[in-house]
Structure formats: C-alpha cells, structure tokens
Amino acid sequence: MAGHSKWANIQHRKGKQDGIRSKMFSKLSKEITVAAKMGDPDPDKNPRLRLAVKAAKAVSMPKDVIDRAVKKSQMGDAADYTEIRYEGYGTGGIAVIVEALTDNLNRTASNVRSYFTKAGGNMGQTGSVSHSFDRVGEISYPPAAGSADDVMMAAIEAGAEDVESDDDGHWIYCKVEDLSTVSDALEKALGESTESKLVWRPQSRTEVDLETAQKLMKLVDLLEDDDDVQEVTHNFDVPEEVAAQL
Image 1 (cartoon, rainbow, N blue to C red):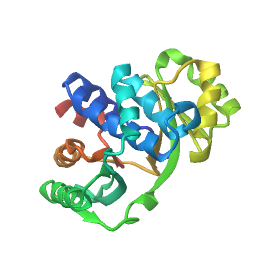
Image 2: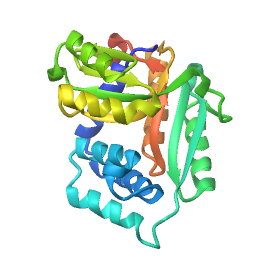
Image 3: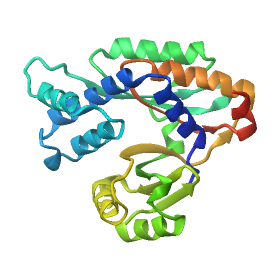
C-alpha cells in the first residue's frame, strides 16, 4: 500500500491559511445537500450525510450553515447534482482522479479537460488510472491521539486493515463498507477523529523533481479552484528537498 502523502497534508494546511474557507464551505455544503437529498435528512440514519457533516465540523463550519445545507435538500427547487469522476495524466505520467458534483456535465467536462491541457497533461477515459488506486475508507487522527502502537492496536480491534503514522498524525484505512462501523469503534477508543471519508488510495507513489512538481501543482490548483470539483487525488509525492524549493 502507498504511504500517506505528507505533501498533501502540507498543501491542505497551507490552503486553510491562505483563506480559502469560503470555497471549502461551499463544496462541503453541496455535499451535505446532495447526501441529505439522496438519503435521510437525519445524519444518524444516513451514513453519507453523517460523514459530510463531520467533515464540515472538522473545518469549523458554523452549525447554521450546515443546517441550511440540509434544509436546502428538502426544497423543491434544490439543484439536481450529478456525481461524476474524471481521470487523466499530469506531467510525467502522474495519475490524477477528479471527483465532481455538477448541475452541468458539459461545463464541468470542458473545464476539467482544459485544466489538464493548460498544465501539460491530458484527460483519459474513465478507468484509465483508477486501477492504480484502491477505494477505501480513511480515518485520520492528530498525533495527540496516542502512540503509533496504541493507535495500531485500537485500529485492529476496530476492524481496520492498515494504519500509517508519522509526526503529523495517524491515518487508518478500512474497507468502504466498514467505514462507519470502524469510525464509531475508533471514536470510543481514541476520541473524535479529525476526518472520516472515502478516498482513492494510490497503490504506489512517484517522487517528482522541482519542474515536474511545479507543473503538477498548477494542475491541482486549477482543479481544486473549480466550484464543481470536490476532490482531487494523485499518486505523486514531493521529496523534502524539492518541497523546500517550492
């Protein structure tokens, strides 16, 4: 299994510090609305909604904003969003998966294709790169949750399949269908997690040089800045010496 990307963590923290909260809130609100519309508006009866609300709380989204997103799902004029996945290659043959929620498939497909082209990559067919990833549940905890050994034991007892720990925290992986159960069990053992979600986990990662990293980060930035794009996953990693230059 591929190691957790520390570079992704650095970028995630940097993004918060750079003031993109409003865009983050917008995307989370959309996910909450879609989850509530597809299932039950009660998080306790809707696993997808429960995860979406948890993700929103993890970034300190106000309760009234969360409530409005849920209520919007029950309104007759709520937009109909389609879930769509795009796959492609960035510079150096790096695999990229883009997950989107859109009310206009033509607009989103055109935009995503243009981002790949601008950054020196190309969009492929569905399935062209996802075979290099595993669809799994990921539950993250801060370093304060415990030692690597303690978290490992708690994860095994909760039914998880794999754990990765470093100075930035702990990442626990499980089967897609077990995410809710494992997350609840871990919460009893370790306290509330930082985040629980479904992810595409790369089976291996490719380290890149400075020039390649710059082009790939341009692609990721373009994609993440699009209002329709919910998640961007890739299989590249940036060595510490290259990250320092970035």
